[in-house]
Amino acid sequence: MNKETLDFYEMVERALEGLPPELSAMLDNVAIMVEDWPELSTPLVGADEDDTLYGLYEGTPLTERGWGYGATLPDRITIFRGPMERDFRPQELEEQVRITVIHEIAHHFGFDEDKLEELGYG
Image (cartoon, rainbow, N blue to C red; front, side):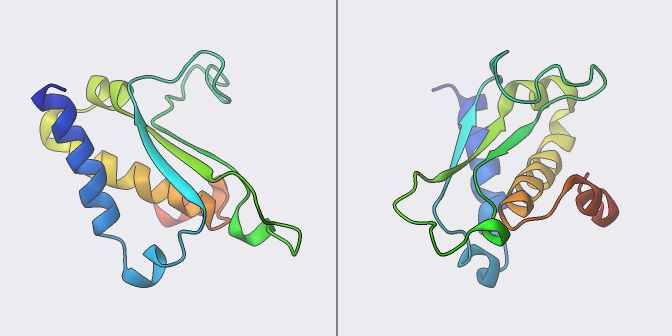
């Protein structure tokens, strides 16, 4: 693992550590991963040529889990290093990582894109 990759992982960790404890405690059955680039088969890749995929939430938001939710594989939040390092200067990168982590965690809590845009995390 080279220094750039390690630094990116540290940025993701710092973003997670910066969450309020009451939100961290609510991260239920969710795995947070870092990948270099999204695969072409990843949902939303190429959905709109003006959009770049920096992160992806896959799973069942807390607001949609019912009594039958159990023994289920963890939800997955993937943060994509390559697109962010390509699109942001080093001094902007950590803030974009923080925004992306919060954006994807908000999906886990049931926020949709419109609400995230309204809150400034679109």
